Image (cartoon, rainbow, N blue to C red; front, side, top):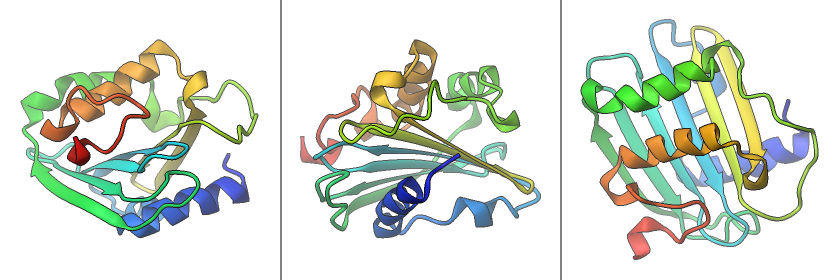
Length: 171
């Protein structure tokens, strides 16, 4: 469960990116949607959103801000949208399935709120179901790190990206 503080904090990041509300996307009776938000301490935030996850050609939208991560979201720096091929998503779908993500998986280890460091938020929406998991990078299990890398590998500019790195477009 997200605290009001965290909900506002993430909401500000997503608002600046022009990202849709996943509580609204949960009303879509036909499709699954998933989003990964990475909010570093002081480097630009990143969101990777896959719409219509189970369609023949889902779309991937990658957005970065130009601000200072958790200190100041800044504004939209870059947004790219790609059409994905289902065969290129096998590893991501398997990783999501192994976490039982659609049934409310990914329990946080503890309810501690850290005041510094990179935070990772995974959101899922499907047929009136909306789930959010927020973890500090120090809480990530190897399997969660692997899932994050599967997200990054779907977009050319993010392949090989690491948590806490600068925006891939600024390399």
